Image (cartoon, rainbow, N blue to C red; front, side, top):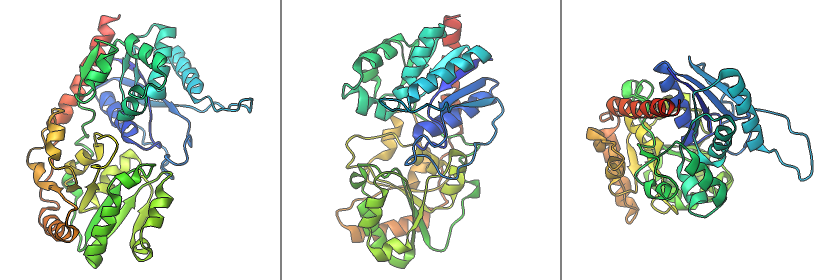
Length: 379
């Protein structure tokens, strides 16, 4: 069994990579491996840290180490987060002697993992998120250090959308699905219908919230009137702006709540009759963990993507009969869309779900094999 040092985002930071780290560490530990997660201090980002999340449940075989070094004020003043992560990671290397270093996200975790591998000689596997590619790699931000990190990794895990970008820097590439939910947590067992339609808008309210179709959600809610209960699960620098854009009468009837930690996500999804997945106007398309988690929980997905199942099938993820719980919606005629939406959800909520067990086992087995092969080849 392997001893793995995993440097990455982790709850209570929100986001798909933090959730992926949590569930992947748990799954690998469940197969007998020891996982040491090195991550940020609590409260590192007030806008995108989940409030009142508490500490993560104790996961056997998973040990979380936070880079919480107090940094004195100095000129120019900075928290030097990357140095704190590297220092904590070096401490864990000294005490646990890991077989493998994994960087779960290129900036800054993968760069820190690269430095750690260089300092210790421990083999390195890098992973990345969509923002790593579109905000850094393709915009030529820190091109020298990122290129060195990718080129030095013994393997870089990517997906079909980003294989060409990563292959510019290294031949050591493994293509895998970005994420598959854990069926022991994400399943339809506890999903219950409500009297009124309970729909949810879940996502970051950042600079791009106006491109996420959120205003169209408000229009649909206005058309449905008393037939709909809307919950907005969101945080971010654009949330106040979004709230102010909602008419006062609707704003007061909206349930506004912050993000929930990964371990509470199944219960949250079970409480809704549908979630919105609207990204047609975003600057670049993003793989959504939320869509897969919702379908695994038996919660329908309302989307502006014409053929959402195909966007997952290209990653090797077959949604099977759960495609019946995906409702493509066009905003060309909001009144008709609203009527069709109400009928669809009334018929489908709780009736179709995605059995993700086989996909999850393949996903975890592929990552486990990659990690073990990298250790063996470099021992």
